[in-house]
Length: 75
Image 1 (cartoon, rainbow, N blue to C red):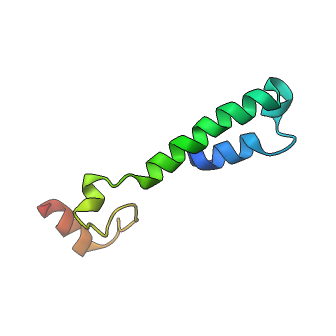
Image 2 (image 1 turned 180 degrees about the horizontal axis):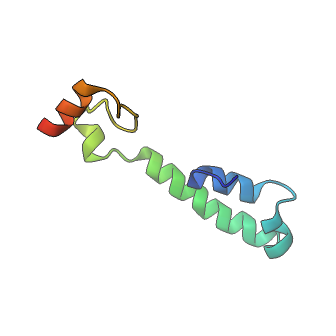
C-alpha cells in the first residue's frame, strides 16, 4: 500500500534498509529526506485562511449530514 501523505512517504523512504537507500545510497536519502521533513514541518506550522476563520469542518467527512450540506450551500 502506498503512503497517504508526504510525511508517511518520507518516513518509509528514510527507514533503514529501504529500497531508496539501496538504490540511491544513505547520503542522498538522508539529504533528500531531510528536505522533505523540513517541508512537512513548514506545512504543519502554516495556518490557512480556512483554519484561521475557525471552520471546524476542515478535513472531516460529513458528507451524509444534511445540516452540514446546508451550511456548505450557504457558505
